Length: 505
Image (cartoon, helix red, strand yellow):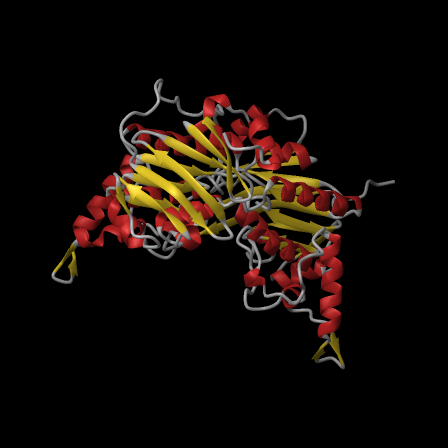
């Protein structure tokens, strides 16, 4: 008896764009009921491959077989009809529509062929949300009012509203706290137990080992390894396949002695009703201070309040001993603050503009004369700032959207270097950044601190906070519950604190 063919088989998939060969003969096979992890650095071809699978891109060459039969996926609708659903990292939900309307978008339940049965849509949506472990999400609520984690659950409900047999998940845990990741993995386990296959993409290698069955590694548009056992393949081997070299998970050395001098940044009894309680904070020149806590603990809200994007209920922010005007980004930037926000594509970068314009946008007065912009001076300044951070490619004229995640983050940092930033606020600085580029960013941040910047860092990855920061403030439900030098903490201690909320010390 012949063995049953894979649920999905992609053979020799090739795809080129002008000047770029994104996929070069990639093979991928996925069995029913397995979690097949797709790994690779930014630019390795992962996004192009899943867009081919989703019907969003047409391959130049190669064969796709579904349950043993050759198919042509001419559109996302064609892929969905076969039972292939894709949940992208950049969620494609319609914010001004309700949860139920998003879940059934394009296949609304109807009566008489054209009247939408809204009650039926809400009821079936509620059943899907219950299956996903989130019965508290109201099907009638607007998607734009939901948190990022809740929006991801809605995307999963939309996928399950079809007769889906394979789900592609692109960085699904990026915006989730540990409890939500546990729930995500429970959902994946339930799906695979029902025979649904999952293609799982993540930069977090510890997740791959925990949830994956097999691994395919892409590098420079080619599959350099396929079908590796996820749980037993050494991390060092996976990293070497992804990068072409061994990468040690080490952080830059901390200074031997604590930072000296008067604080550059001071926070005195800063509070914002409903988001975080009053607390104090100081960061000296050359010091990196980390904020650790779960999603919803107030980490990002604190950074945005310090930056002036939110107005505090009480308290002060001081730079070099001088208080800032509350709720004023302009005052913060003039005082020397710079923010690299959590969602850099939506909140920091002009994706259709060049690297030059993205770097210079906060310093345009330097290049303006009588209403005219000195393009040569702007380009020269941007080139100098990006070279200082080893941004690649070394061509600031290219659109910033063409850069990898790590180099896009370097473009944001270059903007503040050009501006003369003295206090750098970093919110999830390595989200969506591959393994090799993370080490480069860590080195950049440490070097900037060593050159005299004060750095305040927020990250949902506890090892990142402990490895990069000099001191750490642990947050729980908007309250600082512990402060200590990073050397005195470990990951288990921090997780105990954020879960239990031990008294402040």
